[in-house]
Amino acid sequence: MLKRFQTPLSGATEAKVVYQDGDYQVLKHGTFVKCAVTGDPIDLDDLRYWSVDRQEAYKTADISLKRHIELQQK
Image (cartoon, rainbow, N blue to C red; front, side, top):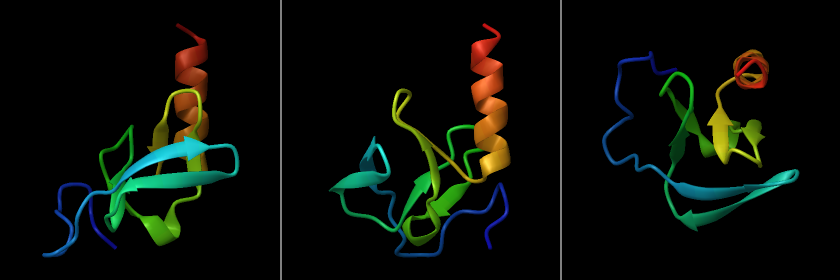
């Protein structure tokens, strides 16, 4: 698992995706996306949490919930 300030392995490329309800569409092929909150890479095989409205990916459910609460308070 990569740590926050590590870069993905050589040859890994960032994917460009459109987040949809229950799925996502890959626009530019790659191996990972970045967490909108932490900047951590998320392997596409491990991508489980995102916001359709904000088009953001989240590494964990906890991060997703915290982001949702943060934005509701603004």
